[in-house]
Image (tube, rainbow, N blue to C red; front, top):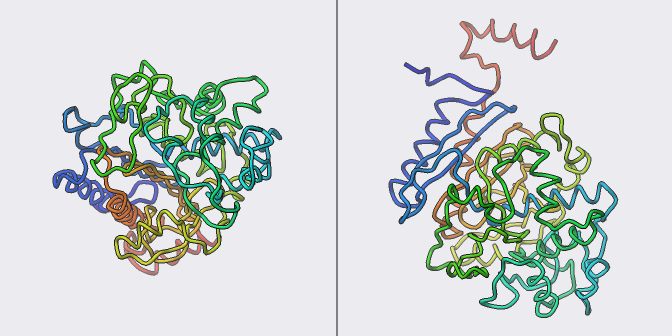
Length: 412
């Protein structure tokens, strides 16, 4: 018989089992079809579970090696590659897009910098595609269309308006054009991030060997965009393309690989002796850079659901928890400096540096975004409730014994 009061890495087994049961209940109620989740603290995994199935027309159970489309969680991976390029002196936060992509001309957009792109304060419209209905799986075509059709609607830096596509497409192209080895974005991120971190089941586009394990995304009928690819695999076929190159939504991965990525972030940019980023960089980009400005995209969503709008809480590239009591995918109980990213109605990764905690959840069947925010908020709060001190009086025969050990161990 298991001890329901046992702990792993400072996480309550009882509370983590409640988290698992909550996801099982959601799936049973048809809110989504399946999930893979890892919750860890101090680098020790307290919960690692796969639940439910892949799709309505694919009843295979979700497995540890199931490959998920990450959607905008892809942006976190692209962000890290940009930070790395800055540390190597290839780019800077004040590098103008037009200095690397000269065809991105015309006032005021030609004054856009990497900082504007990564704080979602570009002044560009928040479009899902430069031209409705165009194929989105080839980066060169997307960049050409952005340069031709996506023009600023206001001066950069004025407002925060989440960029579903243009900002990270431009960042991916800037990385490609400044790479000394002349690599494609796909090859660059594989060489500089996936291979060093041993993220062996992660790729830009659905690599051929990953295709049998890939869960083809299942979109709700109300989703505001389609995503066709050149192989004519359907309205959202770009997410099935082997050679798709979409730095904003195009990475596929497993729960284990994304946990390795999260642990690198929790460890200050290093994992298993491999350093990707400096702690200084991570500290800087996970500070608040958007002040009290709301995220216009989520402000509209909040007003539509009767919620009180709240600050955007964006660092550089990463979303932050912030300190307001509001609807947030990172929960209400995580610390204000908690940082991470999320993807359309289905994926989330966050790191709480105060609790020293990593949370990754990848789910199947995209949810309405408002429902998705409420879902991940609830799961995050349950997960954080599992975080307990290493020493509690309940573990000892007397309060006096606990106080003695506290003085000896905690306050030597």
